[in-house]
Image 1: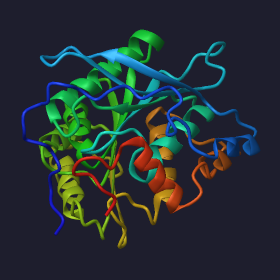
Image 2: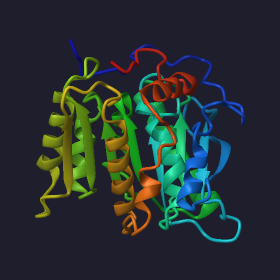
Image 3: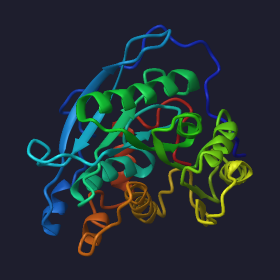
Length: 302
């Protein structure tokens, strides 16, 4: 039976996760050259590490995707930070984060993407600190002042916790989110009038669709405005925890949402970039999750 929580209540371990090597097989998708058929250059991908200022200390890390010509042209003033589930990792549900990191910097909106790997997966407070440290790093290095946070599964907890309280967050999106440590933040996200997108599969055996339905309700409890489109809940019929049956559609919706939070849109002729197959099928997507470490611990794609 599907639950509502994948957080780990045991003490934070003494040793955090280790940085992934620059040549890690999940640093880039297997068909990144498909962007070339759209006359777009693949992004510059950097492995990054940055300090986290909390009681646990240490550094968080991940892969940063930037427009290929970032050395000569500025990026957007907004970035997307992608947070994985209870196992950590950095490819996201069905490898969607790998694809989004490839596509968003290649659009005219020029949105940088940081795929963040937690120091201590499944612990909300340290993961919230990781997220804030990532925001600080991107501000220091690139002058980025606004952020869209995207979270899968457990990742919904740090997404809504930060989005509900930090004025720098201008968008919040989740895939198959848990409700634990997220409901108050979802309500506060609504109160702040931050646009929200919530996706969930009705066949999810890990976290019930009721989680996203509850978070959606919390958002509207907090929201006091009149924009009926401020938050959107999309349920995919009989799909699983990683939305593996509708991964490409969910990926496209997420890309369009992130771009809209930057006050832009996918321009004419750019649809081919958003729809490009940097991951060809379910098998490649599941392999990406395995290689990226997204299926560790309590996390799975069922």
